Image (cartoon, rainbow, N blue to C red; front, side, top):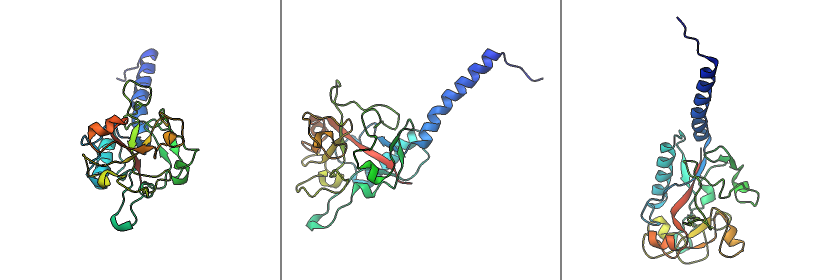
Amino acid sequence: MTKVLHPRVAILAVLCSTAIAFPALANSEMSFFVTSVGKGNGADLGGLEGADAHCAALARGAGSTRSAWRAYLSTTAPGGDAGVNARDRIGKGPWRNAKGEQIARSVDDLHSEGNNLSKQTALTEKGEIVSGRGDAVNMHDILTGSDPQGMFSTAGGDTTCGNWTKSGEGSAIVGHHDRIGLKDTRHMKSWNSSHGTAGCSQDALRKTGGDGRFFCFAAD
């Protein structure tokens, strides 16, 4: 015998199933996030391979089925040889955050003034906002090692904490995910190339407003 639900019960059941489906849908569309946690050892991420693996692990934990996750990080090479550009690692786009909001249509759009990156959209894989300037704890420094166009830096000195293998001396270029800085300058408003860190340790990263987080993009 088929049991007929009371209309109110049926409506409640539909609402509950919809509420459960929405996060799953968002996670299936997610192709960009800020890591909810760093690797815990300052800017020593285990190189690009270790950073990519961290992106993939966090994405899987959030329900993503995508496999080709890449950290938005550049590297440098000794002797004047060309390094790796963050913009060349992340696929072609478009990219969406954990809530399904489009961040950018393409690589060029991502590196233009028209991208949709802000504190409200640069969410973690869990769909959470990362605290920034003006909050009780500022964590807006996001590791990139890049110039504004997503290329490896030619500024000289250490700009990648030894290509993401150092947790002591050195420095790395960071961007501000909230696009706000102490000074109202172009660099302080840059999501990917604001300034260098005070060092490569966890404590040094925190001194300038970060904790070892980085951007992750789905390249597939």
